[in-house]
Amino acid sequence: MVTSMDAKSIYGSSLPSNAILVMGSESHGISESIMLKGTQISIPRYGTESDKTESLNVATATAILLAEWRRSIGM
Image (cartoon, rainbow, N blue to C red; front, top):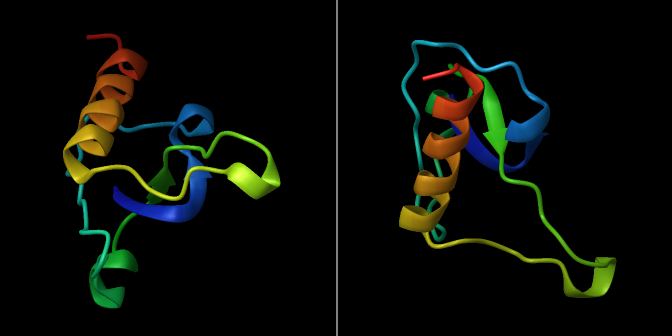
């Protein structure tokens, strides 16, 4: 699974029980070649159009994604 700000929300995705999560930095992101190899997921943005969150610290985003992944596979 690869993260992308414009991908489908992790909360509406069917997550595999066995996968690798690839996170990119805010400034450089994930390379296109890696992006094409995995299912793209995101943490949904909250707020109105004018005040939507733009990004999260990579450690915080990783924690949220791993917690939801674990919850979704019933561990």
